[in-house]
Length: 232
Length: 232
DNA sequence: TCTTAAATTTCGCTC
DNA sequence: GAGCGAAGTTTAAGA
Image 1 (spheres, protein in one colour):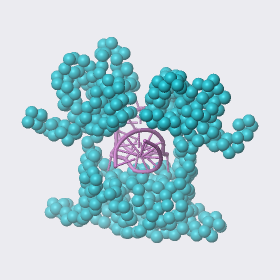
Image 2 (cartoon, each protein chain N blue to C red):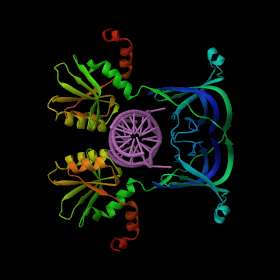
Image 3 (cartoon, chains in turn yellow, blue, purple, cyan):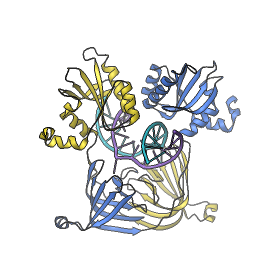
Image 4 (tube, each protein chain N blue to C red):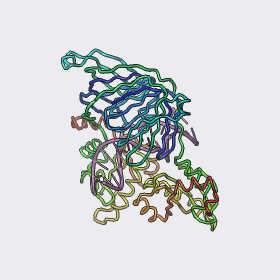
């Protein structure tokens, strides 16, 4: 990885056209050919960048650019999409190169898949007497997160999100429409379960007769370790 | 901005729990207090990070960590959310600090807003004799991109996307449902306009009686510069 | 390989 | 400040 701190201006032409006026920035040239341009602020998103695979080449600046103080012209182009990034380098304040090697990668825990496992294990959270039919119940338009039966033997389709928004309600609605065409399992009720549900999503869900369920991840995780705590 | 290349392992606890095994990485400490951890590959997203505002402190490693080769322990915590990042530093290969100063920021052009302007200017693309009513027509569930009248005087609601997917059709469907409840403007037809529309989105749109319109951005941009080319 | 859904999304605008 | 939609989204998972 090559790290360059330089005064530079940047022009991007691709899915959009963008320009960065001259300023001091970090240019990060990764081993896979990609390049990131970072400033002192902003979150993890660079001001500008080019994804791999891409070509890097150094060009001579035009006369008028030289007159303006440009010492080098970097060209980075995307091999697939033909997006181009032109970087005008004025002055370089740091230029170092270090090999980092292959990264073993991030190990995650606590995402939607885990919520689904926990709710499948604690299916009574959707109502006393409920029973799991199956997780990832396949339909032609995609898998329903959880299919279950409630205490009265009615089928329920459960859509699980970490954060419940309108999209999730739409998704569940499509599943319900489809499932309710199957007379073998109809009528199917819907449950929209998430750690947090946006007010608009709640409104839309209620309007469509879909039940909302707020999941307490920490409590569910603890209960999965110690089932007795349910009755503590 | 401080740049550190070090052998390190990382533990994150916050909205999820994650771990990075020991490897050589770039640690980027920005002026606003945020930190990014980058590897040699991957796009612009870091392996791990902490957003500002956050606290940075250096701690003494535990005895067993010292025995494993840890020379320093960095703690980065989010001030608002209480997310915590622990970085175990083994060996430091680079440690430099440079002031970048305030960045003037990115100047963009060519996004959805521009498509909307262009289509508003060239509203006849949706049909001969069409007339613009207004852009960003506000409704209780959000703004309709463009409201127009077709050649027969019927109202049309246009949803514009750069890439048309199912979500966009759902969004337009909600607007149409709402608009059609208003007898003053009903019946309202829908047009789903995008530079590119996914097959599934086309199918769903057709099924709901929504017209699809592929926008040629380059041609529209040229026509806005030279209106005569419409008749060339 | 392609498509779809999730993301520690981030970012920007409107209310 | 909260909420919602867009993003050069990116990324991961499934068909």
